[in-house]
Image (cartoon, rainbow, N blue to C red; front, side, top):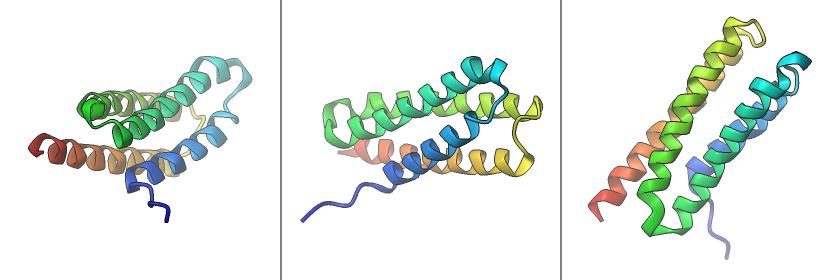
Length: 115
């Protein structure tokens, strides 16, 4: 019987796929600067979730690292929107997903601290 992945992993995977689709449509001159960096940050988020899931000793460090990457992504998405590369609706979608992941990470960190 396979264990279902934690919701934070599912939402992070969803946002990663969405991010890859958005960054692919950035202007060619900015795809490397912003696109590649944002893609890498999302991959870092996914890696942090995976490591936190399977390594209880590294969980707190990974969840704090995840939170920092989420903060960076929030800033990058606002810059990308200000440049006109994404719509308001896309910015709101990204912000909602980043907030959701952040809330789940915070709750997980709080739970891990009490154990």
